[in-house]
Length: 265
Ligand SMILES: NC(=O)C1=CN([C@@H]2O[C@H](COP(=O)(O)OP(=O)(O)OC[C@H]3O[C@@H](n4cnc5c(N)ncnc54)[C@H](OP(=O)(O)O)[C@@H]3O)[C@@H](O)[C@H]2O)C=CC1
Ligand SMILES: O=C(O)[C@@H]1CCC=N1
Image (cartoon, helix red, strand yellow):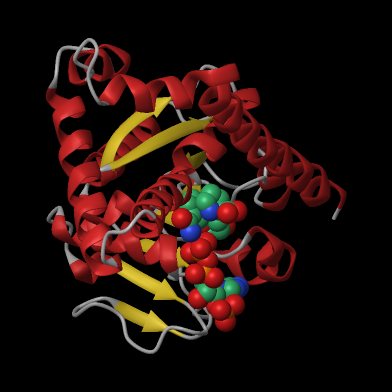
């Protein structure tokens, strides 16, 4: 397999780390990135697309969505009738990708997050891959986390907000818990450590529990005890739910807006 990856910053780098940790041979990968100073050992790193090479088996678009129009001319020669094109570009839809890369055998939009480096990313997939291309997509996603095909591309904006942006929201929640505890009197470094360890343990427990998170919360809250008073604050006027819905709505709508901008280019 010849895998050509355009863009190896935060997200592309996390995916490459996940593939290498998952046992894919580094020699299979060529990374094109004008910014990256060093690639993982064994991976070929180029500052610009190579000239005169046959189309790759797999091409990953890993640069920023706004960089697509500048990148198309250098990527296109590497996308042929046997190429599976994977795109992690938020807010760039299948129609835009197909118009830019008409020769691709199959195109799949992939929405991961940075936990791909640890094999713990949710990964949403949507595209026109069938048969071998679909199987290859799934094989490539397996070491990065839990992949699922969406029933339609119309879900991608919301899934981008939930699965792609989601870690940022959770990091802000961890930070807010620690800041709140520090404001209430705990030493800041201790508040940071305790908040992070608490979230790590709570997520790990929820991931392996047969019970839904809402039920787990109920089990933590002893009747007449400490936790319920905090939960009541979160629930007053549906405060937490409305905050989360507004957060996801804003991110989703920006993804939809970016889709329109990319179409118009
Ligand atoms: N960050 C995240 O958590 C997630 C990001 N995504 C998607 O991943 C993509 C990358 O995001 P992110 O990793 O944060 O961005 P980064 O800016 O960290 O990485 C993009 C890299 O691509 C390079 N690049 C720019 N143009 C080209 C080109 N023509 N050919 C090859 N490489 C190029 C950039 O170089 P230079 O800096 O010189 O421009 C940079 O090193 C985006 O499309 C985003 O929507 C999806 C899910 C989650
Ligand atoms: O913020 C962004 O646009 C990208 C997409 C999801 C996460 N990061």
